[in-house]
Image 1: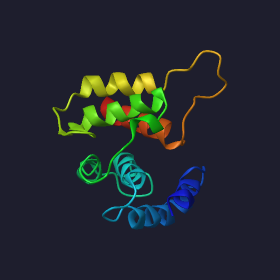
Image 2: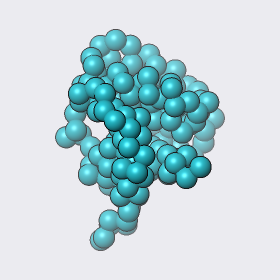
Image 3: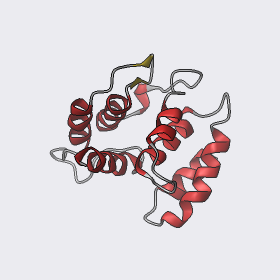
Image 4: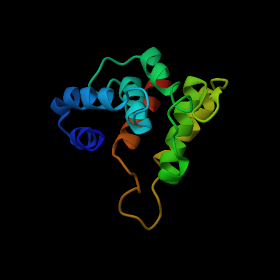
Length: 143
C-alpha cells in the first residue's frame, strides 16, 4: 500500500493524492507503517491533497516514536534536516515525544534541506515529498 501511495504522490499530478491518502491511512493503522504516518503528517502540514492543518499534521507526527518507530538511518542528511525542521516547527521529538517549538530553527533546517549539494545534479532524497514539504513549510513560516 505504501509503495503505491508513494508512486501516487511522487508525480506532478495531484489528482492521485486522494487515493494516496487513503492508502497511507490504511497503512498507518495501529502497528502499521511509520512512513505512512510521516507522509500523512507531511501532507497535512502543507495541504498536499488535503486541507492544510497544523493540528492534523501535529496529530500524525506525534504518533512517531509512540508505537511507530522512525529509523533515522533510512534518511539522507538532507531529509534529516527536513525532519528536524518539522520537529522544531511542531514542538516534537519524533523519537522521544514533546519538545519546545522553535520557528527559527525550523527555518534553518528547511533552508539547509534545500541547499544544493556540490557535485550532484539532483539532491539525494528518498522521496520527492521532502523538498516539497520543506518549500511549503518555508512559505508558511514567511507569513
